[in-house]
Amino acid sequence: MPVQLLPVHYALIFAFGLVFGSFFNVCIYRWPQEDPKEREWVNTPSHCPKCGAKIRWYDNIPLFSWLILLRGKCRACKAPISWRYPLVELGNGLLWLLTAWLVANHGFSGVPESKTSWWYLAFAIYFASVYFLTFIIDAETQTIPDELLWGHGVGSVLFLWLAHGTDFSGGWLASALCALGLAGLFLLFWKFGAMGDGDVWLALGLGSLFGWPLTISMLVISFMVGGILGIFIILGKIIRKKYKFGDRTEIAYGPFLVLGSYITIFFGHDLINWYLSSFFPSAGGGLSGTGL
Ligand SMILES: [Zn+2]
Image (cartoon, rainbow, N blue to C red):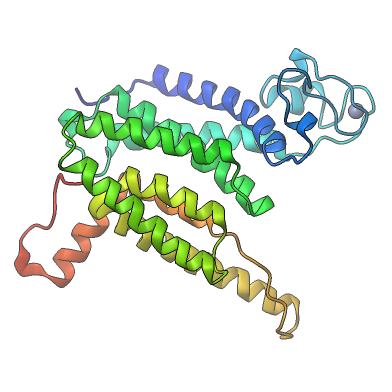
């Protein structure tokens, strides 16, 4: 049955998106930490990084606590709390809302509307969250934590099971080949220093999730997004440096990959169909219903 969402569903999805956004703030803080004590979830409760005061439950309500109760300051020492915390919460709430709307109104790329179930909505929200976290952490630290690489890989395999069942000859095989092919390609980039090792591991999950031909869409969209943003980043640098070249800062590629992946989940086949009908109109209506 296609997913039909009522306003009450959207309200609930947004509310849960805010709550999970609050949890994701903790992930963003803890996962990249080197110190094992700071990575520890159970024995190290959430605390103010300045004075160490434990954060009480009522100071942890998404958006509300930061905006109204605390007004952006620690209750104990009045040190400012970054505006990033409420922004991540709001950003995740809006992302979940957008994702749900896309599943209900546009559908999964390559999945017929009749087959789009609530499971697809759950997977879309899951992958959107993994990509959201990868985007922020990789942009900030140039690393992708193992938790995200594993989370994405396991999610991809479970998704293939939903999409292809136990027919291992078609979609599964294509996914395995795409995973190996993409990881191999990225391994080559990594050898030449153009990519991080996190990207290579991420490629295994992305190739298996998208299979054939969506892996190509994902790459094309990622390179387009990366190229467009890259031009702005480089232009900004040139202007700041007043035309002095020579300062080559590493640009993390993960954020572009996950942005491209999110777009591919919904629009991957649209891109392929547009390409085929523009350049090979004699081939007919393009591809449909393969891959994902
Ligand atoms: Zn404090």
